[in-house]
Image (cartoon, rainbow, N blue to C red; front, side):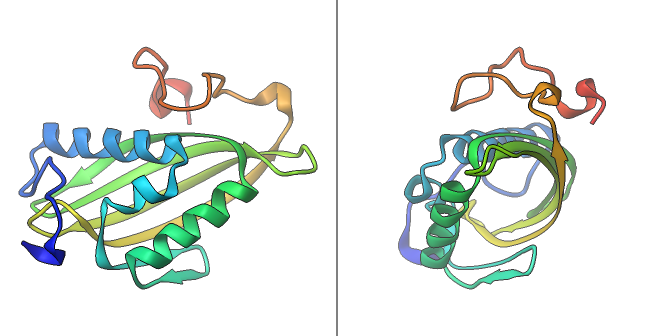
Length: 159
């Protein structure tokens, strides 16, 4: 077992169904805003590029997420499967958040993920753009936490 940790199903090689499940589990984790819990989905030596920041370990990923969710308040995220192969998944996503001055944003992005055989993410490459929005233009209104199953996906929202 890589990293001497518990496997994180679904495991590669991915099918369309298991890739979509992996994407939803990642979305649910990030919507929890629990940096310690979310970091467990990454290998100890995970490598990230997130905007202009580079992460080179699970510990750095946890610190990154802690900083992120202290800055990005009222965070709500939707991820959608874009493509997949044996050990890789590509997603597109959008999330809404506000800063401590009350300014709202919708951030749009794409991520490319690579997993080891235990289902831990070893690589995460993210490209993200932030769009200032008015509070009345927000589309993600569910209570903090997991997105309800009946909430529209990005495609259904025209995003």
